[in-house]
Length: 493
Ligand code: NAD
Image (cartoon, rainbow, N blue to C red; front, side):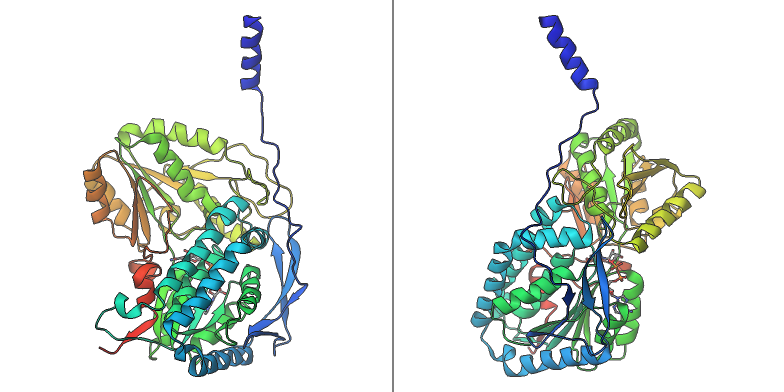
């Protein structure tokens, strides 16, 4: 009997088992066939007359059509925002503004499941992430900044903080709702009005948020949402009556925007690209470190500006870390974003898939060694298995350039000085991670890392109270925390 049991266990361990699918339902989702622009508190047809498809990148099915705003549409949105600023929003007390922002936060919480599912359908990210990270954090930002709305004089004592006016905000597709919350919540708390353009591949949660603003009774024109491509964004940037540009996106577009506003009085915050170093010291808790590396680069398909895309392993633990990393990668589930077991969802668009494939090809051509676990990818949609490269150098293209996909480049080091100089040898400076058992080592490394955010023994942790932003080509200005409020204020004292 005992012998039989041992055999059964043996068989069980050697069998190729999988989790049964656990699908999030979509029954509660209501999407319109066609979405207009949200201007002056109403959905209005675009003057351009043009609509484009937004698709589910996991199935390539069209989810809805979205309006493409032209210059005249953007002008109408800016006029609505100016009118709301002059007549209503700048005149309200902080306490009253706070009430609206709290209401928005509570409504996001109430409708969290709806927002999470739409985020995963439209963007390809796993339901686990949108449900547990994106949407709760978006609500948390509204709650946090609602609390500051009537306390600006305490936040900035003796500085007489004043709102700026109309804020033009442009967001990317990797954290659609969260990036919107990072921008709209502090803008409203400080008394500004908004014209926002979400990324063209992920407009749906922004448009759902517009419906929620209506439900919250937010005065007309306080937030206007214009959808479209880069051209729509550039109409916002170049509009003479926009007082501030808050941009999150690629470094290339960030530079273009900075050139456009160089001769104007527009204020700006730029949250741009990154190529973060994640450093494992030989005394690190290796299992946690490996989990942190997995989270740092494969989380959200590597569509993370602060992704730990360059891994540095101290030479003495290289072999063991590589074994653990490959074993862990083998267990990652790639597939349907709505399955709660999925670790890696769909790549956001065909364009981004092609970019990632291009970099994988370059990596191989430059002589790097590739590892991808065995996994079956769905036939339809845009997919990349988790990928790592070894045998790379500081000069390798895949080490220097942002890939924005689940692709990790691994190097070794011997000394602390060596890893600091390698980690800082990049035009970017958004984030970094350090893994060590010794607090003194963590502090020594973090204090020398030229990055806006440095995590110690953890990775990709966000909180509304904590400022986020970059050095060098990763941008300027901060979002989150008091610094995020300051970016929407001018000071007369
Ligand atoms: P992107 O720069 O192509 O687009 C970002 C947004 O800008 C989109 O809404 C797009 O339509 C708009 N846009 C494009 N051209 C424009 C122009 N000429 N004028 C005005 N707006 C224009 O970036 P992406 O591919 O959507 O996003 C990925 C990039 O975003 C990565 O580089 C990533 O690192 C960065 N990012 C940074 C942070 C951060 O906090 N630093 C956060 C998320 C993403």
